[in-house]
Amino acid sequence: MTGQIQPTRALFDDVMVPNYAPAGIIPVKGKGSRVWDQQDREYIDFAGGIAVSSLGHCHPALVSALTMQAEKIWHLSNVMTNEPALRLAKKLVDATFADKVYFANSGAEANEAAFKLARRWALDKFGAQKDQIISFSKSFHGRTFFTVTVGGQAAYSDGFGPKPGAVVHAEFNNLDSVKALISDKTCAVVLEPIQGEGGIIPGTAEFIQGVRELCNQHNALLIMDEVQTGVGRTGKLYAYMHYGVTPDILTTAKSLGGGFPVGAMLTTAEIASHLKVGTHGSTYGGNPLACAVAEAVFDTVNHADVMAQVLSNEQLFRQQLAGLNDKYHVFSEIRGQGMLLGAVLNEQYKGRSRDFFLAAADHGLMALVAGPDVIRFAPSLVITPEDIMDGMQRFEQAIKQVVSGKQ
Image (cartoon, rainbow, N blue to C red; front, top):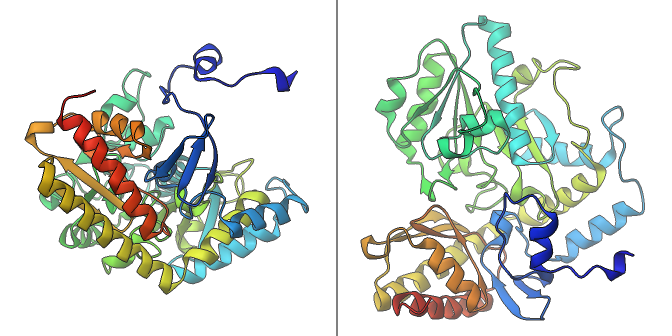
């Protein structure tokens, strides 16, 4: 019976909950930074599944790791541990500030664990009054009710009943706004080194260093959400390494699995000790298949030559986008770092990022938006210069389409 089903875009509307509005195309295969749909039309992928496909599609190292593990063992639950999870955890610990790792299935789950850990740490050490979490406007930390409340976009959390309390929001890159909120009741400050969904807004070194100092002064934990910036995305293994600032807790997902669902929370041994047996868990967290793939991603990405390629790709993107802007005058700035870049639309085209996104698809380019005013690019870290140039030629056609008003 399964073979008789014809998967079409119309079938989505028939059988899927309508919380998504996917494009009309249905991709069926990919290789590197190129994707083909049901009609065998080719696309260049500048989206990376929203900063997920860190090594493109069907990378040989990932295919090999998944295939090999699939012949061994798929699932155990956390009643037992497994070899891929232990190897991956050891590599993450050795490469970062952390002593301990907790595995989950997504960035939201990693952040949920981080926020719960911060609350439990504060309760154990200081008492129930120390429960405030400070986040930032325009931030995004996931779609569970706790994480979406911590996120700084009320549209995502409104309409679901009473929200978790003791969550407040400061203004990103405004240290005075943090000073106005932080106190000895604050258990944690959570920030993205680069706000992703909020518009690809990099934190300044002065701001992030200042937040670290405020956390120290008030015995609060600094949680860095590196779900989107982690695993080489910015040209360092993790973005905190650019700032000379060490977080207390770090969350990572997206690029970590290269397309296979996996997330992790990293922290110190002392802080981790407050998640005692039974305080938190995940049925699939640390799954052998996921960890085997993530280990292959980590082993491939964590090299100086790959980090150098990320930065050279960034320069090529910036050069090409600057050249397009010289011709068509649509952007006010290009911001971001590494392979997480945002082209900010100028006043004339403000609010029209989706128009550029749709036009790009018309011309065989997969791109993203980051709010109504920013076109987002988050391709494979190892995308080739040839694919970048080809993609930019397609993007130029999309710009022409929007500028000419032919929608």
